[in-house]
Length: 453
Image 1 (tube, rainbow, N blue to C red):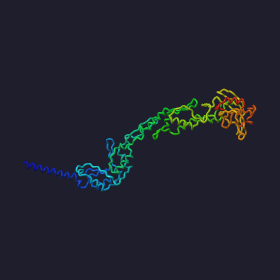
Image 2 (tube, rainbow, N blue to C red):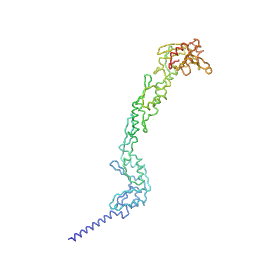
Image 3 (tube, rainbow, N blue to C red):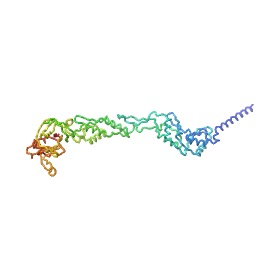
Image 4 (tube, rainbow, N blue to C red):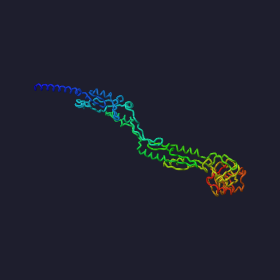
């Protein structure tokens, strides 16, 4: 009985052993046949159970050549064989096959090998198109922090849009080196270049808050023109990490002030003493904004974020602001009547006859709304060499850029008014009796308008 059991055991044992031998042979036949083991990847190509020659051909064709891109919990395996061309060396592939162990064959262990190709070409345009088709569309797009049209800070956005330039560069490098092609997509997202926490943003925010509190007020008599915070902020922009004021708007603003308020050289209506309302052209009196200097002043205030109430910087001024810039204090000179009047605050304080310039082109008294720009006692007028005369006057009050003025003329021995000027007129000045010149000299001041018509 014991012998029978022993025999049965031997038979079973032999059968099991035979089965194991068959299994061993079937499992490792590739080992004996010079093939790759049953589960091998070489440079991202599946060469399982292939001969070296078959493996080289498959690798050169990039059969099933793919990469793996991970996004959160999802893996995207993308076949990129259509965009890749590689050439491998037979002996190098054979060397890879020989390095496999018997256990790799026996237990079908997964083996991943990297082998640098002799050459590799990647069509990046085609590769990008393949990836764009296979990968999911971005949920959000990356955006820099910025200031909106109201200069409120809008924070940056970290999106999931891919920087394909960086990704393609990395993939191309790994293909050339024969490395594995497995990546986390988050490593290749576009990133904001400007963040709300950047020092430049913080500095700009401080400046914006200062600008929002600014107010530059220009006074034109009782009228005012204001550069307020809204106007300033409309012309601010944040570029290349810096807050900048747009160019040109300040110049345009000041030009418009000039168009609105300049009166220099303009035609005026004047209510005369004897001849009703007369029209007077030109003259040296009038408001004339110095645009260049006024622009500089505004820019200086803006650079310091400083508010101020001020007047524009003028090249020339008038007696007062408003429609009537002559005011109620002035010297009225009627060439037709050869008579002048002086008014102070609308009240006539004096009148006098005079002799004006000879009515020729080179000696006539210049019409217009002028103003006293100097006062001098005991002055000599002209030179013999240039003007042909050298005359002493006691009271000199120049009023235009032609060298003409009001002064006494004692040499006329009390003869003034009438038609004297037509044959014995001055060289353009308004000749007055001594007492009238003295009286007027004490009345007028620098800037007093002189209305000649």
